[in-house]
Image 1 (tube, rainbow, N blue to C red):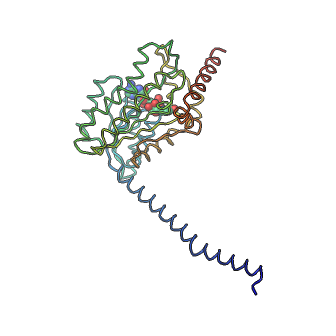
Image 2 (spheres, rainbow, N blue to C red; image 1 turned 30 degrees about the vertical axis):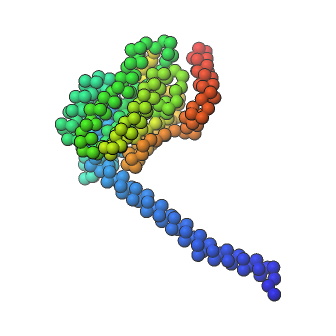
Image 3 (tube, rainbow, N blue to C red; image 1 turned 60 degrees about the vertical axis):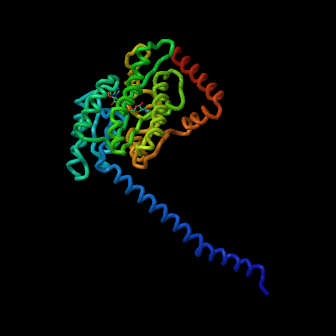
Amino acid sequence: MVTGIARKNIHKGKLMDLTFTAIVPLLLGSLGIFALFRLLQRMRMRAYLQDAVVVITGATSGLGKECAKAFHAAGSRLVLCGRNGERLQDLVQELSAKANQSKNMHKPCTVIFDLSDTKMVVSAAEEILKSVGHVDILINNAGISYRGTILDTGMDVDKKVMETNYFGPIAFTKALLPSMIKRQQGHIVVISSVQGKISIPFRSAYAASKHATQAFFDCLRAEMEQYEINVTVVSPGYIQTNLSVNAVTADGSRYGVMDKNTIEGRTAAEVAQVVLNAVGQKKKEVLVAGLMPSLAVYLRTLSPRLFFTFMASRARKERKAKDS
Ligand SMILES: NC(=O)c1ccc[n+]([C@@H]2O[C@H](COP(=O)([O-])OP(=O)(O)OC[C@H]3O[C@@H](n4cnc5c(N)ncnc54)[C@H](OP(=O)(O)O)[C@@H]3O)[C@@H](O)[C@H]2O)c1
């Protein structure tokens, strides 16, 4: 007769058998498949970025500079764009010093132009195509922020922000697109913002320019699918850069303040890595934000009334803090 304890032991034994014969191999197999998938993904990404001609706007500072470092390390041929030739050359020297140590890295070239001048933008695109032949990946990164009340802000300031953040990047993109279409190959990346998805008070011009950016590049993605041209929109939250310091205010002057939110943001190097991975994996869209901004994006869609109440309260608080 089998006692209760013996029955329990038999049951335990069967369970152990099942663990060793089915569950452990299944777990190990899944881990193996996952590791293989990651390896293949990394190899595909490396092949995509190695020797690719990558154009980066706003490479003199912040996220653009860190993107330059990340794509350079990945073996891409860089075309660094900016307004300040001296700072572009400093970056070229910094990157070239690394290129000398590795045969997989290329010496970058530079193009100087102001994004708010459409004529300059178009001739810069022509200059790039003439000197490097084609563009594989365009990273529309350059941008300017804004601080001010709608009532106090002149139209010239609204236009300046739109010219830099919206009209400049779309003019540059349009000027480079025909050559990508001809090759049936290319990748357009744009650095938007969480503020391309939600609008927060006292940032009207900036949020409007980023909403326009999101809309334009979403349309572009759909229209370019038939030519096999990829479009990636990256929407970061706060990044530790000089964006707030360089922001324009209601009267057109420089804001000149490093905001607390900016100091507490992600590092530019961290976000540049996200951009690199998003491009390498041909992602269509990436939100690089913490829990609260991500929730706010969903709240704007799911419960707009609650979202508007929060924003109105935020506006009241900010105004009170400014007045006190
Ligand atoms: N920092 C953040 O918290 C944050 C969050 C979300 C999204 N972003 C976005 O990230 C991108 C990069 O900004 P960042 O944070 O790195 O700020 P940043 O350090 O101020 O860099 C901005 C870059 O844009 C260039 N630029 C500005 N106006 C230009 C113009 N008219 N023509 C050509 N280049 C111009 C600047 O060139 P100069 O050196 O000549 O001024 C600089 O290289 C922007 O699109 C921004 O909207 C930033």
